[in-house]
Length: 204
Image 1 (cartoon, rainbow, N blue to C red):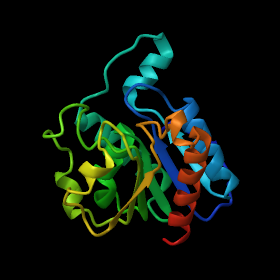
Image 2 (cartoon, one colour):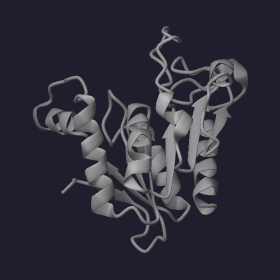
Image 3 (cartoon, rainbow, N blue to C red):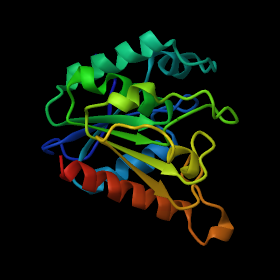
Image 4 (cartoon, rainbow, N blue to C red):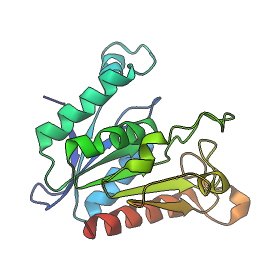
């Protein structure tokens, strides 16, 4: 049984599962803002942590993410526990990537990725997109325009499934934060991200 952190009404028709990124857990400021924002739209949000992050919470020691098979199985277990019907899975960066890799197998209703790590920063040739070409699950990827894990001009050249919609947040970095000179604020970008997710979910 996963240890979930819930936001939003228990009676909500749809539940969104959000997994954390590689470096920060489910209670990070970014995760809080997105979860609370979606709950304000009447959605049920469930957050959980991968095994390595649970261990870090227990002993305070930083450690690298678990190997891929552990991460994938952890997310499959979460989806099965909550039930795939009316379930949307996703997450921040690594969490979204893992969700995208199990979405079709889990049979969920939708997928949402916040800051997808298309490639490691500075290594645009090391793409993590092969499985995205054949993805069948309806998906929304929200990306900062200047995200070092996949900038707007880079993502435009990738082969992605027709089930995937990509939306770019103005001048955003990997946390969707724009530069001050852009005239845009981090709060505005995050609010737009929440609105776009809520709209996407409403159409599933």
